Length: 317
Image (cartoon, rainbow, N blue to C red):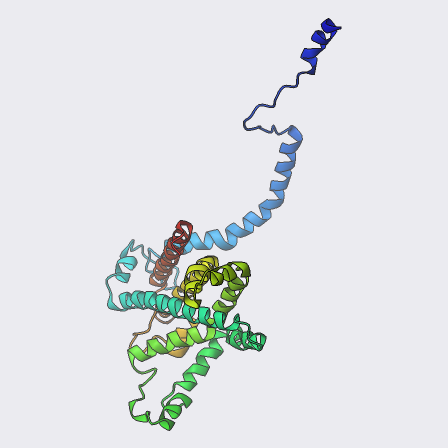
């Protein structure tokens, strides 16, 4: 009996599976299937190359030329267009204003959007109505908003008329005729229109915070400001990251609002890279220089986006 058990023992031992990566081997049928699927993707790749890759590469090449956008003849000027961007007063001013607008809009829009979100999410009975009311400007076309503000800020417009009624008619500035007030008007217009968009994102972030966390902080004796700074604000990091990225990129690429409201004036003081790009290419027929401005703008937008993503990955906000 014992000998029989000893003989069966080795057969009953189950070997433990070896740890490590298991390499799946593809058979000939899988390879044929993969090749057949790639053939279906060929038309999409060809269309993408024709509609996106080739024009992009062709445009990048034309940035190193003096092409006027009409004639077939042009000369290769190498880096002259890029040197001109960083050496002429108009392009340097446009570069600075692009960054100023982007930073100002990002800070103000996120701050106001957060305040509105906290107010709407505070349990008011009319919170649904307020959400619709505050979000309404977002759905209006930027061109319409710019023309509306242009009417409001005219010398005899409603804004100056309201200031006259309260006794401030003697100190009313020329909203669109002075460099500072023109830039100020652009920032206020964009923030007025898009603060509701940031508010919606912050409201979604606030509603994702567990109520038990704030209740526990309140039980521990934390005040309203302490609960916001120590509990709510850290948990809003994903919503903040999304808002900062969207507003920053939108501010850097802003064109319609500036072009309709001030057309870059007065005296080019509110020109951005986008408006200067348009003027150079379509008004002065300097397409090579305009494409160079577009490349610089794309690099700046990409750089800010990468920095923001790195900061988010490190948990700095």
